[in-house]
Image (tube, rainbow, N blue to C red):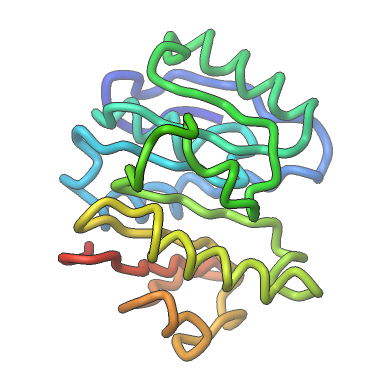
Length: 194
């Protein structure tokens, strides 16, 4: 895996062996960052189901101010922290080993109010096809209501044709962009969107 653009362009980082972690394809990641564009510079980023940390690290490389990454798998958290150290990003990022669907994991510290300018939410695909689906939708709604700074946006990665705009209507204004078998849903917080 590699950083696509920014100050760390071309730098490589590790991904865990096996199929338990599904990193976002480079072309989809590039499309995501092209869409959010200038919002990344100076942004505070929340990366849920962070896995390798590819989205949070890409954002930091492109000028985000800081990133908070949430991942539940202890083995993957260890690799993520190693990636941050190797790329010199540890000082700009916090990592929590926690359930990404739990609002308690969403803030880098308990004293911070809604602070995220960009939220990247890349849940495992089975979560969207099984009993966790209502919790994923509820989490998106809660993120938009309570965690976004004014003008913020949640980007939800899902298989194409898996979700409908009607399911996300409770979260706010949303639109979908499809790239092959992947969809990116942009759900706008208050005061604008991508």
